Image (cartoon, rainbow, N blue to C red):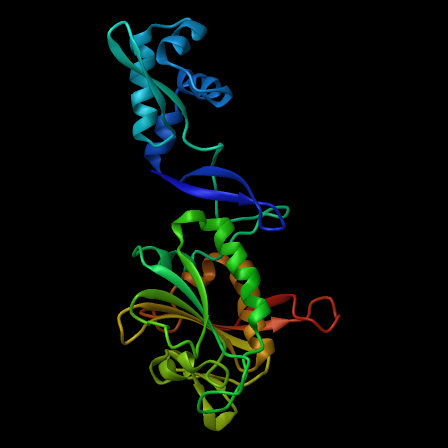
Length: 302
């Protein structure tokens, strides 16, 4: 099948609407030189099958056959109808501005590829909400959310990678309209900064130990991670039945490390925990690779 993508420029403006080919059926629909030739003609302007047949020097019925296959795959669509010789004829056009074949395992240049752990949140057809800790003192620990700038890049990358498939919203953890059952969640920040994390903490496979300065304690390995640069990425089910992806650090540098991991560790984050296979839960550690005082790389600890 084909999925929609939206190409945007660095300022967030829509440049083109693309089709991502992500299934065998869509590839089969293009596995024919004549179909590619038909697509090239329709990319120039909408055409009737009779026009296409004449320009390519093939039979009209053959063109109708290939158009039907490509329409079923979502590659083309009707652009309008006209009554010709007592019958209604349809013109056809590309259903998007272009076709993209996207491989998510690697990235090059400026293309951003997110970890496929995000696919879990989108597989149920629910909306997606990024929950940020309020910047005001709040919650049981009177913490402040100071990581909002990290979520901005993530929201941009989600839109660029998944396009119109995502109904994305961003809210504060103090928003009275926040409904934990109506959407899947990306929860940013530890229990000191985000009351949703605090609410889920005791059920997390890798939880925060308040008595140890919010150190991470793994129920999977039994290990304790207390360094400021350590953070956790774990996918859990909320009591309301939604999925929540927790991105949180022992302190702010650890939360930043989790965002770096989403872009750098790729499929490793979507794999189960090495110590306990029933959980998708990992501990990462931020690294200052170039010595400028900022986290720019990350290591997988668990």
